[in-house]
Image 1 (cartoon, helix red, strand yellow):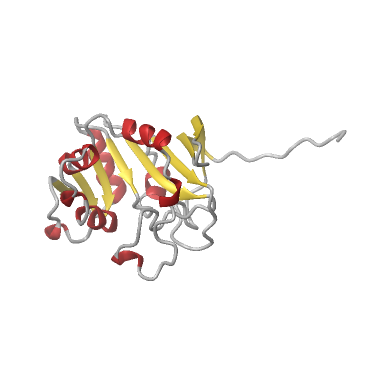
Image 2 (spheres, rainbow, N blue to C red):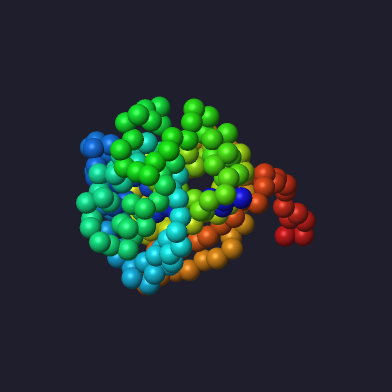
Length: 204
């Protein structure tokens, strides 16, 4: 069965919008490109390592459109070559308009479609951006790993990695690394439903 890894760049308050720069989907978002001042070659090696083996992509439609407007024009570049070669599985209501290939539509039911894709032989999947997909994948146990790059900034507004309504779940921390720029790279694996309890404060 294929594995699915989520990779996301996020502010301390959970915002992922326009981390690398503004595009037409971001409208008048005032803080586009907020990740750029934190160039971190050390952690960049880890990101490149996460993309070092051939992979396929799982994308929401907006992220697909953003990527398709950029990566095919980059030229001979290791990351561009890997992204351009990957099969893109896209959650969209307009599959006939998908031009950046190889590409396939996920289908009308996201959870069922991703479960079917994962059940087939093939390359592991990486999801970048596409925040509306993440809660569904976590809720249905379809994400195998979550890699978060948390930047030392507070943005206060913008699209968040987990919006209100995300299902309560626990994630186990399996690796953590802080770069000299202040970015913290944390890798998690979903570990089950949220547990609750009370602290014993007797004698405190």
